[in-house]
Amino acid sequence: MVAPMRDELSEAGFRHLMTPADVDEALQRPGSTLLVVNSVCGCAAAGARPGVVKALREKGLRFDHLVTVFAGMETEATKRAREYFEGAPPSSPQAAILRDGRLVHLMGRMSFLDRTPEMIAEELAASLS
Image (cartoon, rainbow, N blue to C red; front, side, top):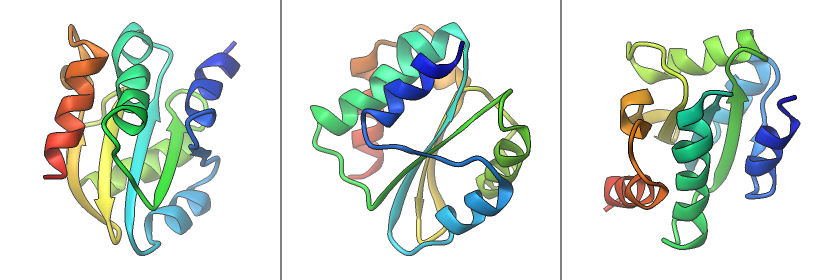
């Protein structure tokens, strides 16, 4: 059931993190990382995934690493990823920008609700300027 939702990010170059060890390895690498906490919810389908893809393809955002976990599927990996979000409450979906393993910008569910993919892409782009 979630394969198309995974594929949407895979096709944009995201690597799926399946275990807490995968998360630690990915988020402790040097450079910039975009981590998406994927979800089956409507705001992930209507806003988060398309907005992130639009930011990469149309806004020219570049990251050294693109990674994702799937809330409700890889629960332990998702829990570990959220530990990098400096006390922010869990939310699905989420998009986090990390630089050298440190959180730079975090978008939670409220950042995706009732927002167009274009608005989401703009916020991601603005967070890097």
